Image (tube, rainbow, N blue to C red):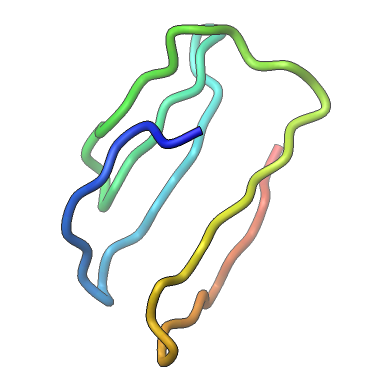
Length: 63
């Protein structure tokens, strides 16, 4: 389900975090969206790159 959009730079860093029981989404350290519903476990993450030359680098999942 689409939640929010905007412009992005190749230098942007994205973070998805569970904080105080809600999912929060950050772009380069700035909170851009807070989910209104509690997360359902196990968690999964999906993304789409709309540029043929786009890539994801240094992706990691931490606990």
